[in-house]
Length: 111
Length: 119
Image (cartoon, rainbow over all chains, first blue to last red; front, side, top):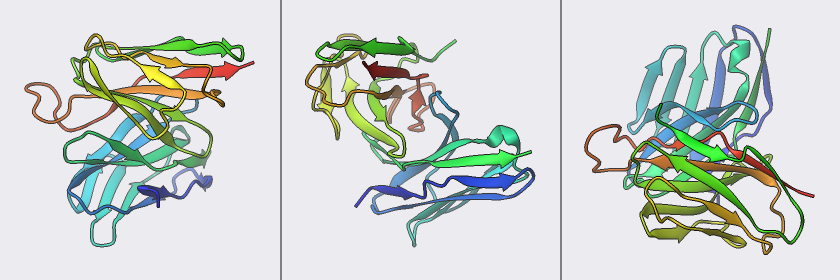
């Protein structure tokens, strides 16, 4: 069983739509959760970071963690063509030694 | 500006050759990582290092080697023993817990990547 499971997509939405990206994980240890955005042929950049259950907002982005169901989500409001990228979810254990990544979901926002 | 620099950005190798990918960071981070990315497979950990002169194998270390002689540098050698080396390679670093000053969130910073193609 993979540490983090993520639907690979691709996901195609019209501009302005609300996007929901989801991951599940299998370990219950205290840990951090992250969402990265990766444009084609570039390194991933951190979008959101959280360690607690509940929601965390940053502009148009909301990260949600449900530890009871081991489910993490990223919501993008008012999606823009510039949001077209691959989104990677990740988790790391408390001691930060290792990071586990999902396979990534490719998002295309059509103008 | 602080960050992680990977070079070269593109590299072509003939079968049977070893190649070395460079990774340099000026973030004063203790921990550094090498990942391999293939289409549809996400990031797979090759090697990581938490301190100078120490490193550990990741999930797919066979056919790769690393060194960590300096805090800011973590080069990766792709040896001829790696059967399928064509991939996108990413170097990353993090400050980790207990670091005074700067970020202490476990955020993992990535370089821009190196694309290796075997001819």
